[in-house]
Each structure stands twice: as C-alpha cells, then as structure tokens.
Amino acid sequence: MATTGYDVSRFQTPAINSVAGQAMSQINSIRGISAENTAKSAEMAAENRNWQQAQNQLAMEFNAREAAKNRSWQEYMSNL
Image 1 (tube, rainbow, N blue to C red):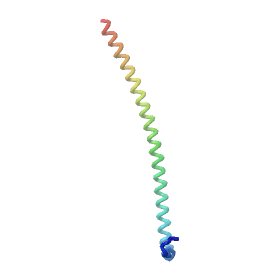
Image 2: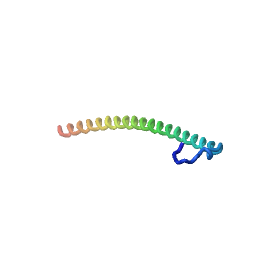
Image 3: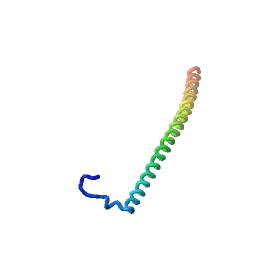
Image 4: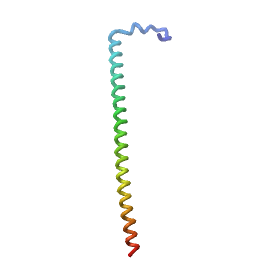
C-alpha cells in the first residue's frame, strides 16, 4: 500500500482492472514481438556475415589468380 495515506482501493473497479489487464496483455504482446524481431535480426546478421565471408573468399581467390597472371606476364616481358 502507498504511504501517502490515500486509500486507492476504492478506485479499483472491474472496469479499471479490465483496462489494466488489457494494457498488460498489450505490453506482453509487444515484448513478444520485440523478442521475435531481435531473434530474426540476429539470424539475418549471421546469414549476412556468412555471405560476406564467402564473397571475400571468392574475391581473394580471384585476386590471387590475377596476380599470378600478372607475374607470369611480367616474367614473359622481361625475358624478351
């Protein structure tokens, strides 16, 4: 009970309790949606990281092949 000295029990009508219950239900619903969104965001971030790693690996392999071609070309040109 509050220490203000006011008796709030007279304000607790079934209608107010119903509204309070609905508000809590809405808050719990929002919390659930928020948790789902957080989980989905984490899942999407992991997928994005994996995709970026794969793309980076492809780029590094391509660059290595191109560098080898360039070294071969330079060796060919220096031997002319």
